[in-house]
Image 1: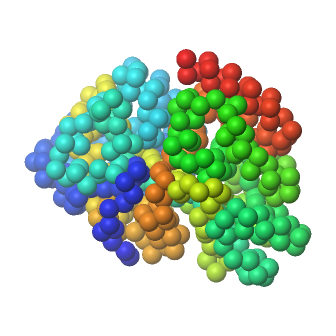
Image 2 (image 1 turned 135 degrees about the horizontal axis):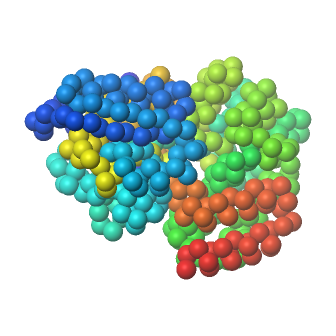
Image 3 (image 1 turned 120 degrees about the horizontal axis):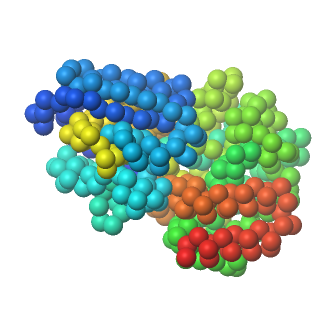
Length: 421
């Protein structure tokens, strides 16, 4: 295990807390009553983590009755607003940065700035920006993870390829892979968001982090020539035939067999996919990871989505809710829930330990030492929800029908003018 003693990337939204395992007890609270929590950690491993956290917190506060409801992750995206209305729970899962905005503006999330003023939260400075709207903080992060290109090292070795660091090297590798009868990349765009990852990386590598975030805030037209250059770079891969056929018919999981079977050599994806790749039969000798290569002379920006807990503004047990948030980000809990046999992601506590898993180590090193451009939360989190929906539809259409670009950009620009107005 490796202890995170460094100060993680300033721009991120994922770092830290000095609290130890006895953090909740340090406040001297005798918690009682009911604590109602709704979580979207519905996949098997996250569900076990969530249930374990509740059990551990319950042992610390035996007079507290905790009611945990776990809902489907996708369904929660449409249910959360209603759930936060009449008779809301005390604590809910959600996401950092722009994805908080609708619920902050609607007065549905509680201001927890007082937590962030506690001495223990000084070490959370690098995450504070992602949790801040209108100079106040509205929740705490509990995990984050890197994105990058996961690839079949055995195929690269067979073809004599090395990890690319430039766009030209990426395309040269791709051509060699295509010449061997394989596709360069698997992807499933059936649910649209995976195409957003490709746009995030190509746009930020082409135009830089600041430009990408200005586009996300609606400050730049989609018809801007710099946006067109992003799509021109992307089209170079599309025209090569780099992506698997009919990707619009597959979910991201359904696209995994192409890589597992060796029909495709790599996958631009978040670290959560590693477990599925291993379950599919790939060994760590076959599987490796590299940072998305440089396109233009701009600093590396990285997608590192951060998941969060929030207190409903109508919470009935505010003391218990705040104590739970303190517990979530404590050193011991962060080490436990982000371990390789749990979430398999990166802890938000700088004093927590990072698992021996090589992908966690590589991801932490990349985000700590080579993400000076900035940290993106991901397309459907950085863009407002309605714009993200229109945008991802356009991105998927572009990947299938690149000749439609002018029409796609015109539609996205119309949506920008309407949505951000």
